[in-house]
Image (cartoon, rainbow, N blue to C red; front, top):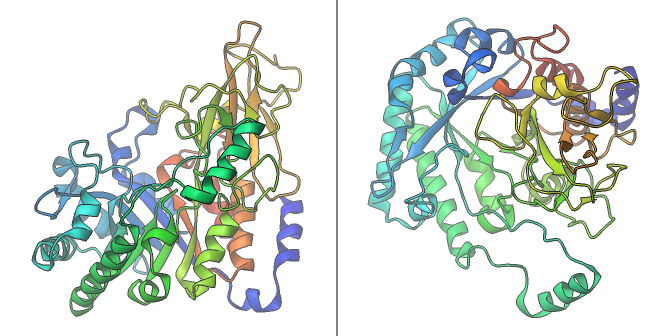
Length: 439
């Protein structure tokens, strides 16, 4: 930890120290209340973290297709839990509490494009969303609404041989990048107009408004930054999951590198620094931006043909490795305490096999991230490659945020941090590390 401190202090100028990051935006996914065993997170488990958080974002509400109204995704829980959450302000009066709509929880297979349909709706239909949002927020004592709209995601990086790479470059001269949304410019304008109408209504009701840019939603397609940023109290960039085993099943790479590593045909926008600089270069005040950090990791399944060194990019992977126990259906996703439990603490531990621990490789350059691996055995089984931000690297990212003069850090989310102290006995080590490095 001490070496990290000196590295980060070397990054900071006098001016950036004068504008040190102060926001710690803590997301809380209410679905964690319904988990089983040690993964279940109640309001009482939030208590310690809220000593460090300046904002709590409760997720997630949904959007009704057709009527465009905001609604609870879990009425049985939220009809009581909303008030339990906002009552936390009695103990932490400085805390701002937001309700988030969308995220990756509002899954509606029958209407996968309903957030785009909201943008395309007429003014009267959009007013349903505004009015229903204000009713839920005011009735339950929330300070504001967080827009985490599920907009179309950019295409994942494709695996190409050398001939395929040349052909792709040649083809782009004529076709451009893969078109995900042919009406993106129209939707950008519609999003700006909708946000302006929401802000006008919220201003009269003394409600706040924030934006969450979900992973792999292309900011250039949907966000007119100079016009948008005055409408939001703050903006969270979820700068992680650039690569995941579901998006990139055949090759494993850092999920959330800080900087661009110009090797192996990597795409230059899949890193924290590019995403932050885009908003800053388009005149968004740095103090309105919060850098999003994931408190979970992503795991790929290694095969007999994957490189033994584990140095990314790791080729010939086979999709997601088994996930942790916190979310049974989330292949390849592990919370920080689950990752910590899998890391080797013994140099003489077995290297391969179902029960062998994962061996951590620390990023000594402090630019890209840490990873851990267990090579596949002689039968091609039990191989795992895992990319993650541990408490140390989360602290490094907090130092980066300070060096850029950003408003702060957003943690996605509290339920994936070690809120029970299972790893080292210290609860919320990622939140603590971020707060320490923020100052």
